Length: 53
Image (cartoon, rainbow, N blue to C red; front, side, top):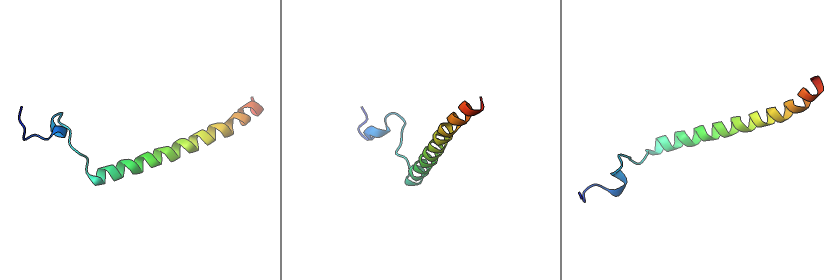
């Protein structure tokens, strides 16, 4: 076995850059906010659907 290769690099994977990690965290935050807004929208529409239908 070649001992010069670090153990994390054996599967062809490399550590992510700090910029990429920051971008992914921001995107997760945006998706979380959109999910919460969508859930609130569904909760708001349930009584409207019951009333109108």
